[in-house]
Image (cartoon, rainbow, N blue to C red; front, side):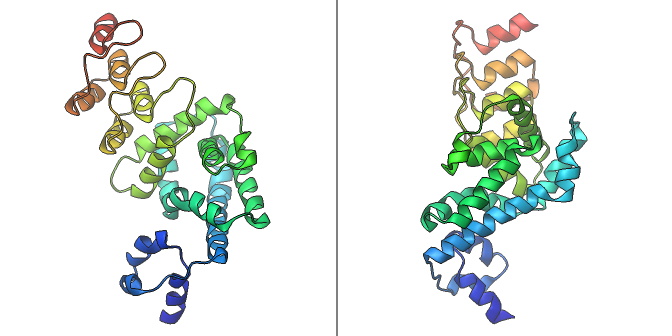
Length: 265
């Protein structure tokens, strides 16, 4: 059994080393043999892994069928995604594997299938957009911003908010990655701004923990603090002020967050 495990580890990509040695302590002493075939195998494996995650009966007959999401649905979705701990690793390194394995018809077809599955499903549309942008795939570049975009954005941020507790680390890190590196939009809203605008305390805290720019502005010149003040989100205002968010920034209408708060009171 040990020799079989050793052989598997030797053919893993170096980025998997940290993950592997969590459970196989002697893995740090092993040599990694990296070839084009290794990258193709790893890339194909990770794509299949995501396909399995988003085509499971739980996904297809459960979350993809929800038309009106409740707080309990977001929590259940977060718990489901957390049962797939390799999602974070896959999203973080799959682009590198695909680049290094070169042009391979099998892998290309798998990626095409994955992106189609994700963008046909409201619950995972956000991930299809993310992969389409960051894999540089021809089909991915053509993914339209359609009526699913707003609904899917609400799902990803609300699921992240539900995953803010420490006991759901895998999904929190994966969703933080997709939010922080998703395709830029015309409104120039950062993930922190979106979380504050939606009034999501847990998600806002997670982004602040990642040191995302606190005072970034959107196309209206507004910061996360402006939106928290507008919504009367005292908890988020407190989080932002504790992190030294600039209270004096004015938006395109020359209003500070305090001006907006007074107008709403």
